[in-house]
Image 1 (spheres, rainbow, N blue to C red):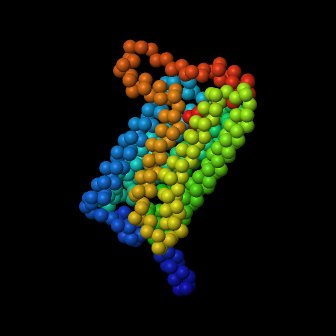
Image 2: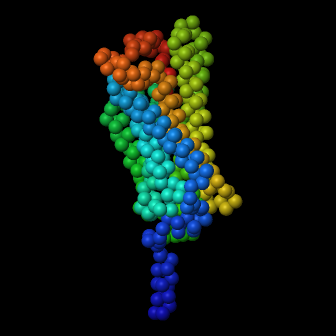
Image 3: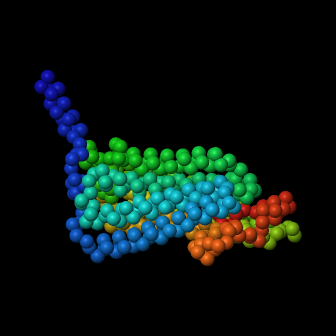
Length: 357
């Protein structure tokens, strides 16, 4: 019985949790520096972070407003773009919240507030990534079926958007509801001292898999468009508008892949290294910068996916010049190639896609 009592004591000790400890306790455990005063580096990071956050908020709010007020954008792809803008808007808010609760203020946070801070970031960034994947798949479907817009019903789009946010919320809230290291200090990560290294590994690998799928999808689109242009250029009936649209699509795909890889890959690799417990990797030295780089992608998304659309740019001008147009009724700008023209081109065998996406 004494032996069993000893086993029970050891089991109880092993399951001891530190819910009543401070954030500083976990930072010390992970050997992550926790400053009590504002350093020049901290001030610069916060100033830059807040600047990026404000720009992200304004640009994505502009995109959402444009999609709502212009009926020409009431199609599945634009609903997904609007949801991407909403995710990036949320990311801007989450990053701004982080900037107001970082540096010396981190030590003053309760465990609950710290988890809220991290969950906001994880949820918003996950929503942005999953939404980018949904857009990639939708574009792949429309390009290969020679359609201007997806035939997906509004109901299915809403269900897809709902699933995106459910996925993002689940991945963002999992650490707060159990997948942490409050009961296993030896499993705490360095970058997020209250998170389990296994969660960081899971999150990083999940995102890297999504990245890989996106690269494959967009590469397939890129190759298809290039081959299509080569074949169609040999025909005398090759429409100049088609060539212009295809070239624009190729440029957009190139920008999307480049921006995505540059902004996201470094952060995911650093998270993966931390999750795998790499002792020789100084992940903390680049932590803030890779996170800022990922946030900048939320700004680039608005530019790449929206600002390259002439109709979207025209709508932006109308919104920004609202005071000038307050006495006139809003009417969408008529582009050179209207709906009838697009239908005619399709019937003649010259497929036209939206050059902005």
